[in-house]
Image (cartoon, rainbow, N blue to C red):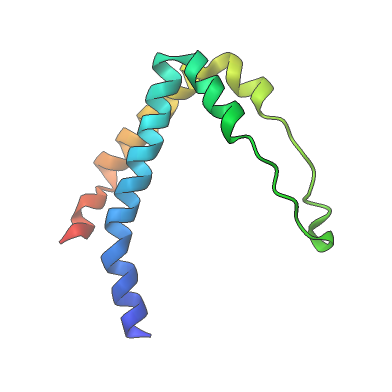
Length: 96
């Protein structure tokens, strides 16, 4: 069990930095080029079918009609959140 905790501690820092960088990149694309953001959304829009016991949760909710018209606002908010997380929680400390 200690090995699992050690591995989680060792890999969480780089993984969290990767997630922050990916979120920042997506936010930047949404902010700079809403058209490219819309094409990325269309390309990545896949529906994952779940089993019958999750049928209650297996309902499609189309967020694209809310998000795509406001892509620049979304991009600015994502970049602001990424910067706040980077400054206040500083995952770089996990790299040591």
